[in-house]
Length: 309
Image 1 (tube, rainbow, N blue to C red):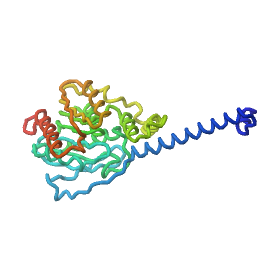
Image 2: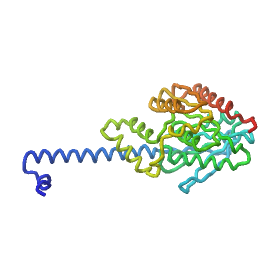
Image 3: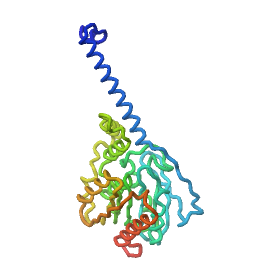
Image 4: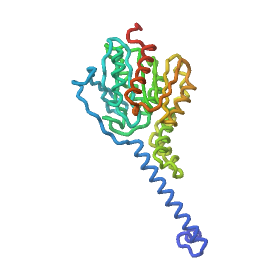
């Protein structure tokens, strides 16, 4: 008791120094924890600016498709019709993006007679909530596949997936669970949502502070405790054997490019990889057109809308 009393009301010089150091350490700990909490909040609840469109005047004659998700809410998607009975390509937008940002790719795929579907993941676009960097989003994609497969105007047994970063992880995860995925294209993907949180923390500049990255990881794991036993997608890549895979890695996002390279190396055949100068959202019109031509050609070769299945 005398020790605690001395710490609370120090009388000796040594006790005063020790008490001051303890107060500084406690203050630093609380400050780092608060900074980390604020940063994690910013990462998981990004600012949203939902784009609104009138489907009756949009090119491609899309229709609205609503489907339920695991939390009891629903997601609103857009279905762009292609050739009747053709496979459907689901386009998965990336982190800090939304479905309206990938409409040029949708147009390119629809022009090649594919049915195309897209929607906003949690915490993005028109979908409220927070992002889980892929955990819950994979379940959302799974629900979309289930609802689409009940339609009588598409091929219910063959789906293609394209996704960038967040969407890339989700697409890979879905391909390891869903046998109806017949072709897969991912751009700047990652193998574990925790890695994406660390990448975003590093990009904020705050990760240079001691333990900020670790606090963000602890907080993210606590918030997603129900997914604590979810392993990285690399542990299941063998399940995509026989599924054609196209990987893109961009020079402008080195951390994700390295992640994508490792995913490519660990993936079974058939597979191919393409390197780009910029990430998809920052490409010039010419670069984007070339990129989309590669994507469309990949799906045409591996999942032709005119082939009989």
